[in-house]
Image 1 (tube, rainbow, N blue to C red):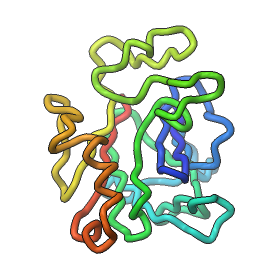
Image 2 (image 1 turned 180 degrees about the horizontal axis):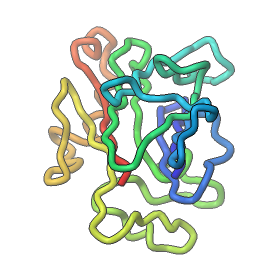
Image 3 (image 1 turned 30 degrees about the vertical axis):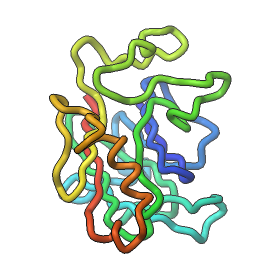
Image 4 (image 1 turned 60 degrees about the vertical axis):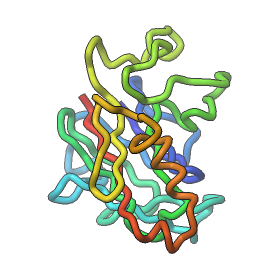
Length: 191
């Protein structure tokens, strides 16, 4: 699987079928990890600490990950482990991470105006041949958005009131001083 982030809105993309192309964001590599791969490794707590670098060719800046070289690095995830994508740094204000199966997520991809979003339960569109993103019957694969260390659960996923992308994303649009009062992060486990 490959994951990428779009620097404009911080869209994280999970694809079951190879490299996502045409996106200058962050990519996740799932596979045999070798030291020579030069992949961005999580810290000892399975965290990737995000910042936005505004001194790059990207229109809205590009993500940097603490301990990794350059901008838009390739993230290394291991199946079955939970990772936390930490957005505490002030440069993340107005740049929430959102996870999707394809680059640009809810904004469409290539000839498709709409593509399935990475959510729970898995969208029925993931069974369509052109998408083929269903991770399997009963597999729970969706981001868990957290504010101040409190994460949503699959039992109450994306309820839009106290948790989920519908709460997380708008929280990044509040005035900067209010945003700084909270701690934002996203957890993901690749099954």
